[in-house]
Image (cartoon, helix red, strand yellow):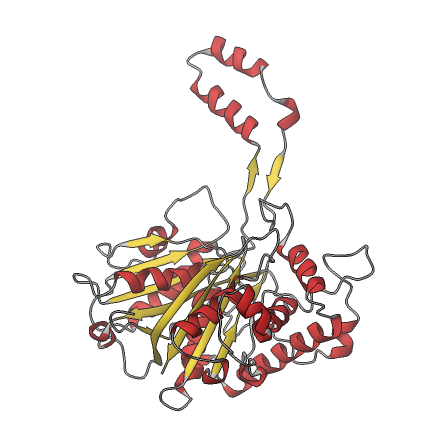
Length: 421
C-alpha cells in the first residue's frame, strides 16, 4: 500500500436461517440497523460507503444508496454498490482503500447484506418483452394484436437458483468435483465442520461476538452454531449434491447454510482513524489480492489458493509468519482442498507461479472462533463479517502479528487480505 490504510472492526446483525428470526427484513431493512449502529460510533463525518448484495432485486439498482437513505444518514455522503458474489463486502473494502487519502476521503464504511428469505421470482424474457409491448399499445386494437402473440410456452416463473450461469452447476456440485480431484474424504470434512461449530460455540460462551453483533428484532446471537452436534450426527447426514454416485461427501452439515444477515467494517486513513473510539479494534491493511481461475479446469472456489502465495511472496512472507488465518468456509471440503493446494510446493510453483518455499499452513491458527459453516453465510455480508472477526482476533495477539483473511466466490474469483496489528 502506498499510504497507511486501516481496517477497524464493525458490527453486524445476528446471522439467522431462512424464514428465521430476521425473516421480516429484506436486504435494505437488514442493513439499516447496522449502518445506524456504525454511524453512532463516529465523531465527525463518514466520507463514503460501499455496500453490496448478491441476490438481485428489481425494486432498486443502487442498494448502497437506498440502504443509506433508509437509515436516515447524511444524504451528502456518496455511496455505491459492489457485487463480487461471496467476496462482495471484502471487495467493497478494497475499493474504498483505493479511494481514501484522496481529497477529503479519510473514513469510509464497507459492508453488505443478504436476505435469502426474500428472493424474487422472475418472468422469462419473452414474456417480459410481451408485457412491455402490451403496456405500450396505444389503443384496444393494438392491445388485441399484441395479445394474439402471447408466448404461451414462456408463461411461467423463473425462480432464482444458486447456480453458476456459465456451467449450470451449483457451488456445491462444483465443490464435490474439486473435492474428488483433491481426494478430500467425508470424515475429514465432517471433522472440519465439527471444529467450526465447537469453536463458534466456545466464542459465544466467552462473549467474543457480543460487541460485534447488534441485536435486531429480538435476536442477539447467531442461531446456527450447534452446541450438541457430534461427528456421529454429522456422519448420518446424506449427501446434498451428489446423491447418485455413492461417493458424495458434501452434506448440509459440512456446508454453510442459507442465511439472512448484514455486516460492516471500517476503512480509514490515519486521519480517519481518529474519528473512531480507541476501544474499537483495528489492523493495518498491509496488502491485498483478488484473483480468478479457469473454472472449467481449476475449480470454482480455488482462486484464494492462487492469491495467497502471490500475496505472501510479494511481501516476503511464509505461512509460518502468519499468526492468524481466517478462511471463509463455503464448504468444509473447500477449506480442505485449498489448504492441500497451499501445502503443495508443486501447486504453488506450477499453478500460483510462486517460486518459493512457503511451508505448511499451521492448522491450529485457522478460524479460532468458527467460520461460515457454523456462523452462517449471507453472501453480501460475509466479507465484512470475516474481516471484523479477524481484526478483533488479531488485536488480542502480540503487536506486529499478521493475519491472512480469505474469501472464495462463485465464478472462480476470490479476495485475500494481509493484515497486521
